[in-house]
Length: 110
Image (tube, rainbow, N blue to C red; front, side):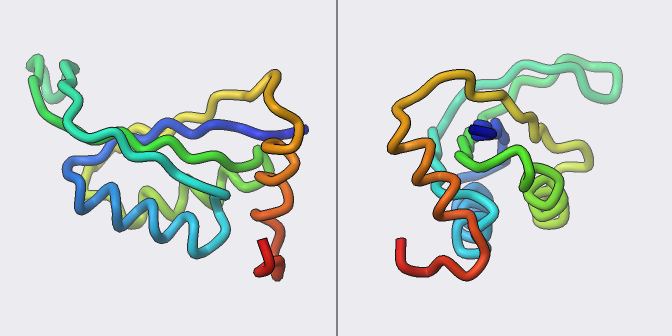
């Protein structure tokens, strides 16, 4: 299995929804979850920022990461968006197989 979980932050629920819909409709991700209203503290331009963000969790394959990352960065409002892949070491095999099947080009039946 080469499933990964991609962690992405977005500036708003609308931005997260737009990105999530694009990833799923273009089969760059089998599914996404959006977690609204997290609080993020981070360094940016020499200062600590304190912002509300939305988390996107995308389930996909490692083979699709670069395409997914490129799509997210093209749509994103941030200059340097967070788009990181986390390897899935273990999981429910039918779910992992579903991720693999759904993200195959031309497989519209799933």
